[in-house]
Length: 74
Image (cartoon, rainbow, N blue to C red; front, side):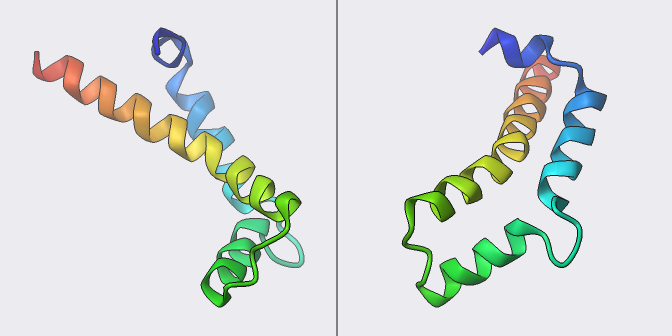
């Protein structure tokens, strides 16, 4: 997990915002995939991978922020 600590926070924030919104037109993939998940139609492996791919930077950002908070509390 030390690689997350070395990753620059501003870059991770920009990457997260980009991946959550990409592609911007006609609608973000994340919105489409979450709608499919809610409707129960998210079944193709490619769609599941796409959902996980777009959520990966947000997950890394959450882990980094948690580790930063935990480190500052020590």
